[in-house]
Image 1 (cartoon, helix red, strand yellow):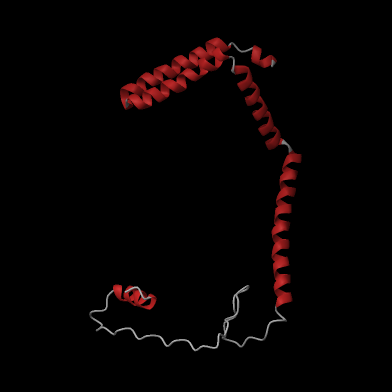
Image 2: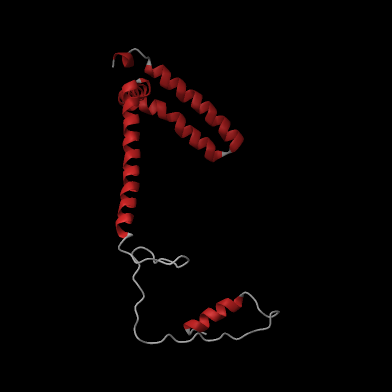
Length: 165
């Protein structure tokens, strides 16, 4: 707090506000009303912070943040902690992969042998149930000449299968 009192805040905030208002005037002339008003709003903030007494709080927040960042960047113990945290994350991922492989190896001997070329059902998939009825034979779609076949034939076939057409 001692450094805060050594700075002449009124001239500093006043100077920042005046400089911002000059830039706002230039923004009005070159780019129009909306950018000029936005620049004016930003220019008034330093004087508003001084007049409301918010500068000590902003100074404390800024100095604490700068102290934290410099302590984080220049402290070897902090970097060692970052390395340990990274190692921990890598070990979690590796152990998860190893656990998944172990679980898959346990399931493999209980499964029946699959012939080469045959597809295996997906994990967690329910086997097809035999209801005792024969499946209906697929209806033959109308054959059109190759020249008349267009992109809508697939859609028409799908609609016919669903009974929508």
